[in-house]
Amino acid sequence: MTARLIDGKAAALSLREQVRVAAGTFAQAAGRRPGLATVLVGEDPASAVYVRSKIKATGEAGLESFHHKLDDATSEEDLLSLVADLNADERVDGILVQLPLPTQIDAAKVIDAISPDKDVDGFHALNAGRLATGLDALVPCTPLGCLKLLRAELGDLSGKNAVVIGRSNIVGKPMAMLLIGESATVTVAHSRTADLPGVVRQADIVVAAVGRPEMVKADWIKPGATVIDVGINRVLTDDGKGRLVGDVAFSEVSQVAGAITPVPGGVGPMTIACLLRNTLVAAHRRAGLTVPQEL
Amino acid sequence: MTARLIDGKAAALSLREQVRVAAGTFAQAAGRRPGLATVLVGEDPASAVYVRSKIKATGEAGLESFHHKLDDATSEEDLLSLVADLNADERVDGILVQLPLPTQIDAAKVIDAISPDKDVDGFHALNAGRLATGLDALVPCTPLGCLKLLRAELGDLSGKNAVVIGRSNIVGKPMAMLLIGESATVTVAHSRTADLPGVVRQADIVVAAVGRPEMVKADWIKPGATVIDVGINRVLTDDGKGRLVGDVAFSEVSQVAGAITPVPGGVGPMTIACLLRNTLVAAHRRAGLTVPQEL
Image (cartoon, rainbow over all chains, first blue to last red; front, side, top):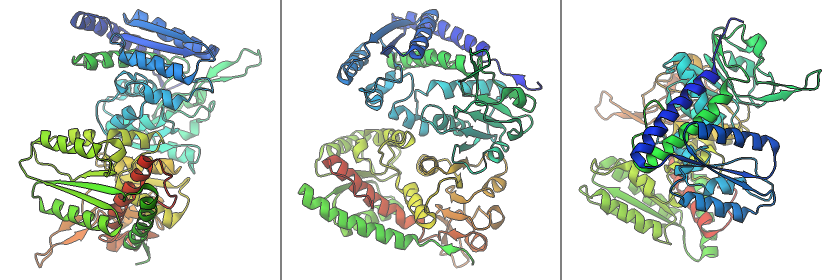
C-alpha cells in the first residue's frame, strides 16, 4: 500500500473532544447542557445499535440525552405529536428520529415536522436549501464528516476536481453542495453515468457513496487522488461471519491513491462526531451564542 | 453555421399559450383567475423594463396582475409588511419582488419572508431544498426554462454529460439539481475550475451562466454538443449603440455545436414564460387542484 491512510477514528476523537470542551463552555454561558433527543421506533436491531452508540457518544461529550423508545405499532400521529413536544422542549437542541421507520409512518412527513433549527440530521428541506444557497444550515452528518476529513488531508480544496459517486439526499447531493462551497469543480456521477471509470479517473477527490461493495477499482483512480469511501457493506466470507467493506476496492485502490479512508474506521466514526457537532451548533444558534470556530 | 438554432422565442410562445389555456380552466374550477403580484422598489430603469414586460405577459396569459410600485426610500419594514399582506391575500398565487433592491433593504430577508408556496421566483431556501431533495418545488425560472429547451431538443437526458458553468443560487446550482434529477452526469464548473475548456469539452450539454461576454469558445465545445447560453451581456459597438451577446461566442461555437440558443431569443423569453408557468403551478397547488402535465 502506498496511499496515506486517513484515520477517521482519530479525527472523530479529536472532534468529539472539541465538542466536549465547547459543551462545557456552553453550559456555563447558557445555564444548561446542550441536549439531544433520540427517537427509536420499533425493534430493528441495526437501528438499536446505531441509536445506542449515539446516546453513548452524547453522554461522553457532556451533552444531555433524551431517549424515546416507541413501539413498533406506533401511529404516525403519535410520532408527530412526540416530535411537536420535542420541538417545543427548551432543553432539546437536536432531534434525531432514527430511520428507517415502520411502514405505517411516512418518514418524509416526520422529517418535515422536525423544527429545522433542531434538525441535527440535516434532512429537512429547509436545511438542504440553506446549504444549497449558502445560508447557515445544519448539514447532514456523513458528508460533513467527509468534508472535514478532506480539509484536514488537503487544506484548500479550491480548483480541485471532485467526483461524487451517488446522488442521495443524505450523502451525494449535500456532499456536492459542500464541495461547490469550497470552490472545487464538482461532478455528480451515478448509476446512469455513461463511462463511470473514465469520469472518476479525472478526479483529484473521489467520494464514493453508492452502497455497492468494492465497486471502485484501482484503474478508476488517478494516481495520487484522495479517496473517501462512504460505503459500509457487509459481504459474506467463507467462515460465514461476513466482513465490512466499502464501495472502494481498498486493497487495490490503496496502491494507486494518494490518501484513502479505510472501512471501518474512516467516515463512519466522523458521522457520529458530526451529529454531536451539529447538536452543539444548534444549541449555540438557538441560544444566540456564537458557534465556536473549531466546530 | 452548422448547429441547429434552438428557438426560445417559439418555445416560450407555446408555453405561454399552454399557460393561457390552463389559466382559463383554472378560473372555471376555482372561481377566480390565478394572480401574480409584482413589487418594484425604486427607479432602476432595467428593473422597470423587466417588471413591465412581466406584467404585460401576465395579462396576455389571462392572469390577474397586482402591481405595487414603491418609493426608492421605502424601508425594509414597509416592504416586509407589504409581503406579509400579499402572503395573506387569497387572490395572490405568486409574489415577485424585483431585484436588486435599494441598499437599505436586505434582499435575503425579503426572500425569506415570501411564503414558499407563492415564491414563483423559486429563490426561497425551502424551495431550493425541495428541489435538492426531489420534493415538489417552485423552481427558479431561468434554469427551468433551460431544462424545458433541453428536453424539447434532446428528449431523455439520462446518462448525458452536462457541464454547468457558473454556480449562482439563481441559475448554476438549481440547474445542476434539475439535471441530476434527469439522471444526467452533472459537473458544476466556475471561475476556480482548473482547466475550464478541458472540462467543457467533455460535455454533451453545456449551460453557460457566468455573465462574461463570449467567454465560451469553439474549441471548448465537443462537436455536436447542445449549448444553452444564459448570459445576456451588453457590449460596446463602434456606433455607440452596443449590442447584446451571451456568454458563448455564438458565431464560432455555432460552427461546432449540434444545437445552440441565440442571444437574444433563446433562454430569455423562456424565463418569463416559466414565471407564468410557476404562477399557474402555485395556483393549482394552493387550490388543491392537480397541476396540468403539460406545464
